[in-house]
Image (cartoon, rainbow, N blue to C red; front, top):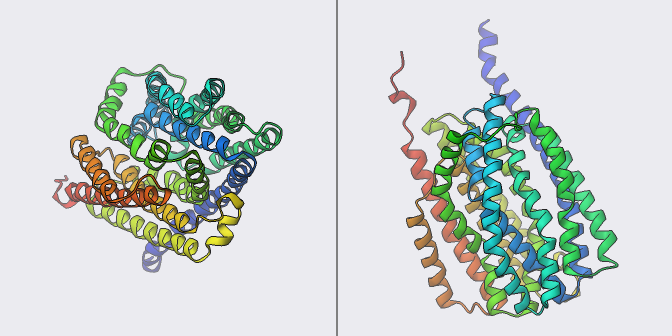
Length: 437
């Protein structure tokens, strides 16, 4: 009996290692396939679209991301935060998700009202013409509305850590996207066709996600007013920051589209495709790490230990990625084609900025999934001040200047989010101070 008792901690650690090994293997292998397929789709678009059309395609995709962020406004994070408290109860979890879906529909209208005029202006500014500008804008609509519900439908499987179905759906979606892109872009090398081919497969994905989600959450319920109040209370705290990140998260594209040339917009978009490799880490993080961090007990030691391990691991991985890109720029740029072969230094700057931004985003994700949020009155003025100071000393009309600005701003935001995370974890009361019977 004593021997068995002594072996319990080891057995527990071994079982946990096996569990993590299976999850990382399933998610990692699926994501590797997804990233390869997504990268092939991106390269087809980069190589076959003329430079001007690819610049328009880049603007459209950037605005799509902004529209989705505006329509979310922190709702998905609020749903994950609320769901993390009652994830074992199918009825209650379904009620939280159903309420989140209802809120998203209302936020979507506001997002369209704000984003569509801005997108039309930028497209016309870069010579699209009214007809093509309208077609590109309309082509975003399917992807926009499908993405709104897609992220919320993933909440239940993520909290339950039923990862395999999610990976199968993502693989299938990307295969459909590659097929549609391949079949259309050869014949119709226009930006709006590429955008439409990229967005339509999400319709199939949402149908599959709804079936998977229903196993763990009864999402076919009416929205709950009390839950709506709780989610909105969180949204009010995070929305100003989310709106700010709509602008700052894509500051490279916004500034180069206003101050730079159409060719520079295409170059930024092409370099952005190389950052897709980081998508593997983003998905692993949002699928395996954030939901588990949301479920952790309110224990300072446990939270701090897990948080520091996550950040150290991310820093080492990101440093390795930047090193590899710096050592082998020529073969990496070759895949983009001859039009972008002279962007060696710019590529390293772009990857470095994206890696630092990923570290910042990871901290933001971790603390918001615990229901914490930096006060907007602190976050936004500090971030704007950092951008203004950096922009004063950098020539933002050049591609290199824009990428340097992006790197500096990402570094500032990473430091701010890490610092805030440590403060909030340190405020958690130690279990030893809690009176128990």
